[in-house]
Image (cartoon, rainbow, N blue to C red; front, side):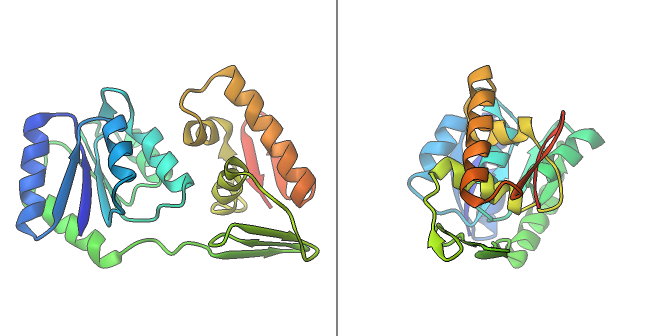
Length: 217
């Protein structure tokens, strides 16, 4: 597998990289969020190993953004933040596995082999809901068999909400996934985008949960 390793500690980065390469993986290393984003423009990775504490951003936010952009390749969180609440947050953000530091190299290698066998998560390719038909692969939205244009950010919101249909997605999580910083302007933009999606796909397509966030019906 081609693995993107995101770890800011030089010695740990080298240790994990050598361990993965022993199992035949090719490893591309990044020491920051910005460096990881640059590598994402150049490669399609088969798996990810992600530290949470990075110098220019939060690993959980990066993970949420990865999933919101439709990337389903396996992701292992590797971090010294081993509290149960942190593990739960990591899994809820879209991680597939969680290994706290310090760890045994043998266990790291075994977990990565298991993720490799599991492969990428299946991604929903189409959604039919009443008069609405969404082709996620082709990014085509149809309402009553008439194509409705959605912007890239509108698609990202729709994909995030429909991937958890019936469950509330927090406003803060949506903002973390789609904007660089959680500013008042980002919050206002989110409300505008949700309003546009409702106009295009129907008022009932997205449900507002007051004080929490949104949910796809």
